[in-house]
Amino acid sequence: MRKVAMAMAVLALAGCGEGKRVEAPRSKPVVTENQPRTGAIAAQEWDVWVGPPDHKLQAITDLTAWLLEHGFNFYIVKVDGKDEVLLGPFATKAEAEAKQALLNEKMARAKKTDTESQVIEHKAAQ
Image (tube, rainbow, N blue to C red):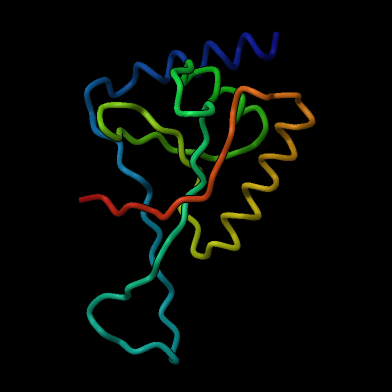
């Protein structure tokens, strides 16, 4: 029953904001006294891409419902007209790899073999 309720909630929310562009959440970099105070801080950020092997078509609602159910925060971006699910952004590659390891561990426990993940460089919104 819980899965049905979760699926209904995801489907209901999927229609919200139809036609609106979704942008990745932006985290503000922390400026310490050791860092130079220039106009922009060139910090590299990382994401974890989650999807089917070889980027094959999969119902995005199934994937996002599973991620929600297992406690993962994600966002969806359009790349070349296709929706992609990303976890992040993370400040360091090590943080992204740790989240990916946790995701892979939970997917293995759930015997979810139709999904893979990889750490990618965060693409800033244009």
